[in-house]
Every structure is written in C-alpha cells, then in structure tokens.
Image (cartoon, rainbow, N blue to C red; front, top):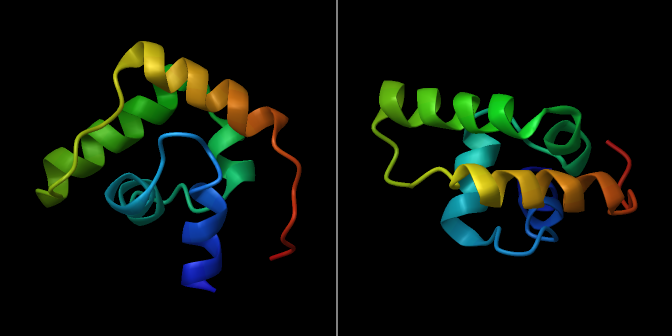
Length: 81
C-alpha cells in the first residue's frame, strides 16, 4: 500500500522520489489529503516535519505549494484505499 500511495503522490507534477517520500512521511499520503489542505497549511506541515525529524528534503516554496495543491484538487481519484 505504501508504494501505491507514493505512486499516487507522484502523479502531481514535480512530486517524485524524495518529495513524494517527504509528503508521505509527513502524513500527507494521498492525493485527496494533499488537496484537502490550503497551500500554506500544507507547507507548514512539511516544514515542521523536516525540522522535527531532520528529513533530508526541502519543502516546496509557497508559490509552488499553491500550484501543487491546485493540481492535486483537479486530479481524478484512481485508487481506493
């Protein structure tokens, strides 16, 4: 299931490998969860996660987070969890 969720996140342009893992480990483990957050909130969750854990990844810049959330909200669901 973990790989399915990581693959699902990777459908968002610019979210591959490390960035998909970053979101997944921070608790944003699906397209639906990604789209439920406002961009500032999503970024704050990831920034906090990186600060707490020392995860070797960089949160998206604010403008990029806005774009990614908008895309996530438009992507069709293709998996049932």
